[in-house]
Length: 155
Ligand SMILES: [Fe+2]
Ligand SMILES: [Fe+2]
Image 1 (tube, rainbow, N blue to C red):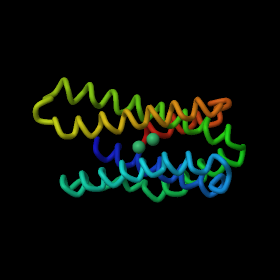
Image 2: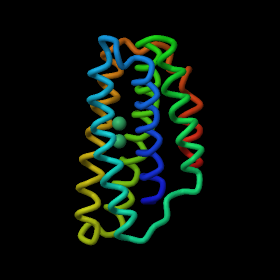
Image 3: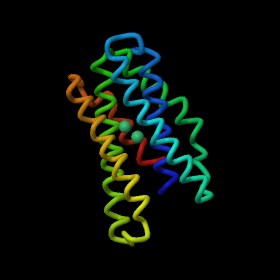
Image 4: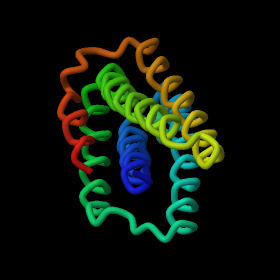
């Protein structure tokens, strides 16, 4: 579970890196940077959690490195709306993923997982913010990024 979260945050970082490479100098740059900065925090936290629990990251990280960046960059090449559509699709998928984890942890043993629950809830809220930011920025056809939703289930 922690491995999947880590991979998701890693992928998100690479997507925003790709978007920044294309749109970094445009008006949308600061907005993307802001979301990326939050993703950096998420990833740093999961790096910590993985180390503390001696969990290995997924061996697919190099794949996420490249595919995440390409996805971010290619969606951004379609313009701001393309990038935001990608953000909406990805962040929706991550938020749902965190929500189902929260449910699972609550069912299992909320007292044991207090700290982890707090982390995941906080991140889930920020992913929702990213999702809403994408929508506010006139995200176009979410279908561009639908395959990401598909990919995220197979980390
Ligand atoms: Fe995140
Ligand atoms: Fe996010």
